[in-house]
Image (tube, rainbow, N blue to C red):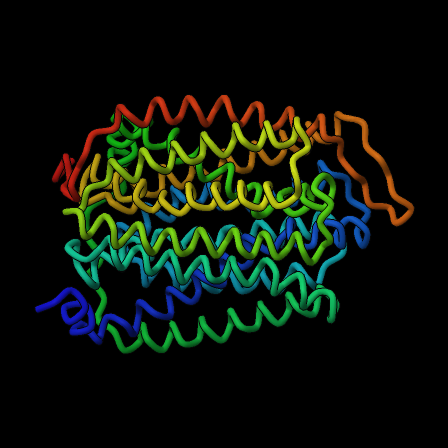
Length: 424
């Protein structure tokens, strides 16, 4: 039986897999669209500083990161479908609340609720993909899951920016929230028709977390993957579009187009990488080294391009390099699981995902403070333009971290898709 025949023979699995995948896509739209895609619009409408805008993004990310640990425990114990039943409802509520609010603290709260709900989606998908389809074809299906999920992020870039030029941004976000509600309804129907695994009678324990954190290889994966992911994610969702407008001379539509292409490149890299690892006997290490190397090269080139004021198209190319580096880290998630144990796979993924988003949250706020610390130019429209010195300083720091990450990646061993620890 071929790989595809084996996958599609499990038709009952798609009743749960597809709705969870679509809810994950909705959560990724919320993650990508705000605040970066309509950064200037939110600043003008709400009168926020760069630090407040960074905090708006961080309120989602901090919550998402912290609740990774809670979601990881719940997914491993109760199964992904049961966790999505609760998380999907919270995700829809937070998504609908944001466009209905004007007070900055209520906006923070809405983003926190969205982050809590979204935290359940990724880990549930990790567990359900393995439970429904098995480990043999896990890399391929995980890549497809990432591809479809990031499709939601794609919709949060250029399509969202263009819609907000035609319709009020609040109306667009209300429409997105209602779509999430509809998809959640399809999930509940699929769940009612599916047989779920029994809930184990074992008591709660911190042993899985101690196991993951006591493993030195876990920390190597956390550092190497997080440098790649944080660089890409902050560019995609926080200041990447604004940088193109401030420094490279892009219009809002052109800058959003670059972010759209950035996300597309990341998606197709994820899909390609998942097939590559399957065709090469589930080798992980070549892709890990490639991800860290491309991120390091892109960071150094970006600092040079800012210093020498290269043409605008050069920055778009470098952005795509960051997208390629970020498209490979689904392999990092598999490596993290395989460095630990099969029975805590969701919690292993939760730890690396938690640190990844904590890094994004902390770095987003530090970047906001960095940009605010340099001299700015305020346009008559009220939009603030940040200096080239600020952006150059930023990417010099990123370059140091990325190069060090590439050096450390050489210490990661090959797993070939096998767990180094079968049980904890």
